[in-house]
Image (cartoon, rainbow, N blue to C red; front, side, top):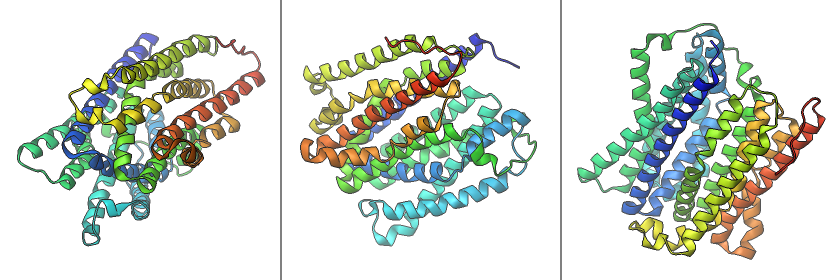
Length: 420
């Protein structure tokens, strides 16, 4: 049954609110951990999550998107999901071991503890894989709010577990960081199992998932999301190895704050994707709204820093001079990141993800490290970390926009609106 525009807006609105709550809770937890244990722990956490994320995304073979599409078409999960999922998970675990070997693990574990360390990380990978499967099924059955709730419940349970552990006298940073890593996945998994037991139709199965659909379905969209994710995670691991784990903690906390500021813009981006009209006349208006929000957000952060507002905050982690200097530069990325959101959302909705367009996004994978080396001699090592991130979004968004403009000009019957 086709959803009305009002229903779509309602779902998107609730989903955006849940995402804001999840991000606020997640950011509050991160700040609390930095306040108590320092930026080094935040850096270790980011290394672990980056390794997990790369193994999951790089070696999912588009499985979760394929499950989503299969469920939406067949009204049930694939009959062979257990077999296909087990094969993909096995590949992810092998990749996890390889990525962990390449990461700066000497900052996290001594040689004698290697096996236990890997087993804990493998457990997190298994839970993450199962949660991704559950999420794909929920989205495929149009239980969008429940899918959003998985992340929120996981974050909430993890935060409660950290607080409880600390209240019981746990002060070992390694124990706390493992609760922070495994807790969200475990909480989401438990809640997903509860949902699937409560709503029996979620567990229904129908049809067989064909292997070729893992990479053929929505290939361009998959490559775009893959490129953006890989670009960030590889850069985070590079910062840890080339700078320090503590510097990674500073950068990742700044990055999280910038992402939180930008989150409301996803509301508009989702509306663009959900819009059924083939007209592109709304692009100009959306451009004005997003750019105004982006410039205003960027200016607000820079002005607040210039006026010393951060120096008045009661939290030492947010007063830290290194954090403030990194955040001041990273704020410049907000307008370009929002422009990229709008351009990608428009291209996906209008089916204009050409090779040149996808290449513009794939270009973002090597850019951060390349720009880091380019700017290190001119800007100094610390400035280069955040400046390279800003430069990546600037170049990526402009190249992608140019590719979209070219696609529009080639399309008949679609007038490209004049830029504001």
